[in-house]
Image (cartoon, rainbow, N blue to C red; front, side, top):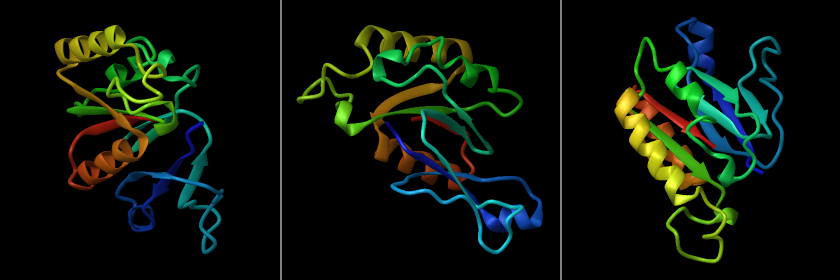
Length: 156
């Protein structure tokens, strides 16, 4: 299972200008900010998640790469307004394969036909570019582009 930790930037919360989402791998639990228990800084989500620049959702019924379908990603298209998403990064656990179609875990990745369908339909319907990569690269790419105020989403 992927452990996704969402970090709500304390300065953004304190100044009330919105909530920044930062994806990070987590080995433990951090239930909140010790300075102010009403404004958590970190939220550990031990589940599959879909994160947007200002929000994060549990990604129900997705526990394996084969569960990733165009239908399971429909929330991305639903929440694509009013500020459209330009990129969606799908992070696959490195223990499940790299998403390249090679290596020991190659049989445990998003089926190529489904990945191609996702890419084609997301681009056609919502002009979203979809890329599959390992979880750490997906989180890092999301964080960098989100930090640049780019419209990105990540599914882990």
